[in-house]
Length: 287
Length: 98
Image 1 (tube, rainbow over the protein chains, first blue to last red):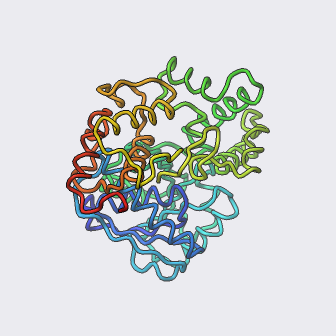
Image 2 (image 1 turned 135 degrees about the horizontal axis):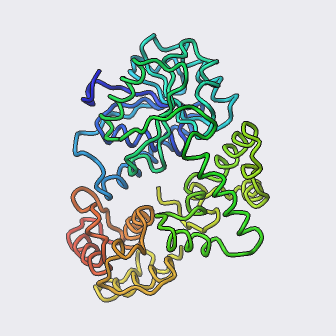
Image 3 (image 1 turned 90 degrees about the vertical axis):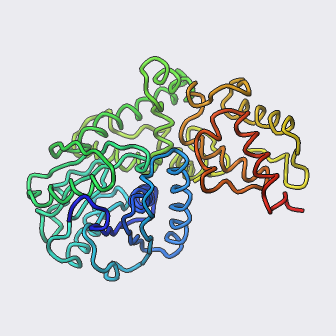
């Protein structure tokens, strides 16, 4: 297996925001994907979403111009067939991820790279659930994965060299640049970003500034390409709250305890772009 | 998103399209724009909003923006978008929902 897309075939578990993002990235780079979810309805919607995201990637000129890889879907892990790597992109709840990874590792043969796209859960914590801990590695794709070329790669203490070689080859075939770091709750990106977003929401909650003002200040003064509350809407506020809980439980850092405004929006179903409403109103959901 | 220009009543002249687009953008990005202003270079339009523009034009004007037409340069300015809509409406086998 090398950097040629023809040598790769991915299974992606979870047809949500990140599952469809990563599927778009892979298919757009000529790599076949089998997308797995427990819901046929989710899978039907996911196929449409991937088609829309492929258009977005083409619009932004981020595809290499290869023939696209095939996208297939299944509700059964046992039907994924021969794959070179499995990407887990299910809900950011430790018990859910552990259960899915345990099932995956029992189904796939040795030598299949297991990738978790977790936002915050330490890789070694999940390695306890898999049959071959050396084959598990973290790859934190950004959202949208098909537009942002840098990814955070987390090597757990038990991740072996063959797995690191395999994931490096895969990322090269996907046109991504991985920065390999050590294992910790939230890794680098979300250990920094999630408390920032939480504080930005607190500022809006207190009425110090509107979400538009908060974002305009960080964009205009600090050069952030997307302000923290627009970023929160892109991530999905439910995922953000789940991730903050993971961080808070593992670090005890009060800045990671989800603030009331975030919790309220999740209760109301205002989850960000994916529902058309979060800190901002998106009208019709575009992709 | 308002849809005052539904299929049967969609504007047909380049001037109408340009005015409608200027109004749509001003409402969405809460800032006045000029017809020849580069929306991406000025930072007014993000990569995410770019896709909303594609969907908006397709929905409002009954066109399909596909193949080589689906590129950022066609959305860079209001003038470019107006030209795109006129081109696709004139060459499109799909009139605006007759």
